[in-house]
Image 1 (spheres, rainbow, N blue to C red):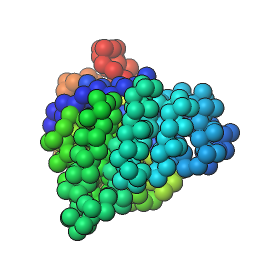
Image 2: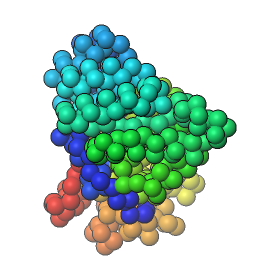
Image 3: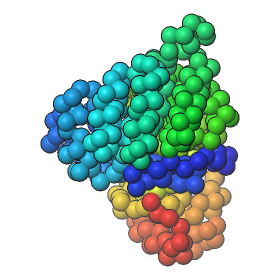
Length: 360
């Protein structure tokens, strides 16, 4: 993986966003924001799932009316999502949100954008300049012929220049599209021009199955490039389902590991142990574990020993028993029915040896 792209630091509530800090996971409520009890319940569910920043739509005055109570109930930074009406952005800032997501392409005149920037500056909160392929300004569509990556980057740079001219730097940028190639090109081009932190997402990715894969392709490629400072997986589902997918993408790219990574063989005629049952029991045993440890469970004598030694903890099984490794060295041989407990004991030992490594 490439080293992380250097960025400035942006303060959002108690969180710091940028290359010197973890890549945070975001989501957005799907309740009617004015339904305060329902929205608070969803916020609580998202936080319990591990969500670290939460966005709510502020699409009318009743939603804005709910913000003070939502802000008081939300234990993570609260972001107001604004489209079309800059007045609602001003109301959200007055209500004490931690960040306003603004789409300058549909907010109207530059002066309206400047009014929001001034209010955010006075309140000491952050902004996100959100550029979506579906709302690129008309003059840029005429210039490029369609919402290309180049059109999106020019839109973003235009708005960055506006806020920077006012001395405002506490903002992030997102460049989103439903097309993964456009997402990749736009973010890579923008990253070469500025040190502004990036919020990554493939917008409207779809249902959980395909949408998760599509997000993994788009976000994973950028994370492997060293790009991205916050991410959201956008699924047509309960937003709680987005959170484990986001953390798995971070884990798979090595960008941020907050739980054990389990490696196991595919189904194969060479497998000599009940690998699927073993993995099911191991996952259950490790439920809630936050150690960033790599565990390999292999079931044959061909690749098993070598690959087990490459992980932090590994076991190469066959014929009802397995060779257990830690840090590439053989520890002992254990019967198949004791493998899960043996692996868990090694996880605890690994944690003790690596107590200074962050686990979340």
